[in-house]
Length: 123
Image (spheres, rainbow, N blue to C red):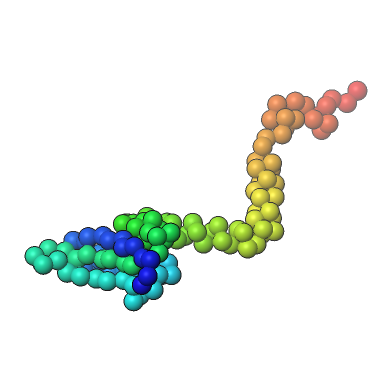
């Protein structure tokens, strides 16, 4: 590949290395640009990816992301995509939340214990 840089990461187990490879592939990196090598001393694995310079930081974040953090990041990304795809749904949810908060605010007349029309004495 012309004009590429390499992002790498070392992992203690094959499972962790494979998870990093899966994160890269699911993010859109080509599988044939990713290499997985075992260390010579059988104490871990190394993942390397050849990519353009502008994608190096993104690739390194994906390689070094923990599994729970990656899951949270993917979920948040999905929420943002849904919100931008359906702005009226987001507006409707905001209006509904506003009505809910308004209905939970106590009214001044009912909370003060003042005598209402039914409790007045007749003359």
